[in-house]
Length: 157
Image 1 (tube, rainbow, N blue to C red):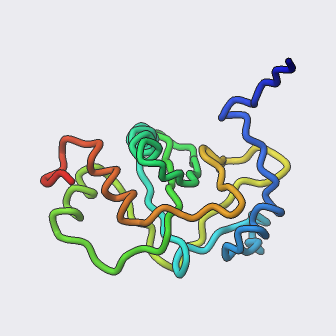
Image 2 (tube, one colour):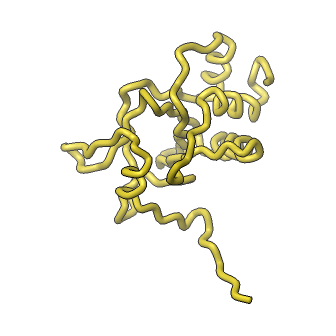
């Protein structure tokens, strides 16, 4: 019997160009920086939060079998950006208040997010890389998961 070791999750190497072509996500190369960027809006939503809350949220989503691509952006604290299906048009005021208390940011449409480069480490990395053919989790599912991880939510569920 042959046993092969799978790389640790932090050792993900993503073929950025091939993957983005396969996913058909709207991207561009920023003319000023040369970085690849992803357009939020249309088919993609994005939700940003501190990494600790992001790890808890990712665990909840994994338990419900809702894998979500996550970008990690350095800072103090590090920020995780969850890429979701299209953003909804409105949320209840209690939901918005909960997200605000948790410092969760709903990334506005028409925002360009930097993507990790294929060849060298940069300020952006994949915490959870997207998979070819992956269906993105619904935006509201990610919002529900983040709210369920925190005791500051005014309403559970």
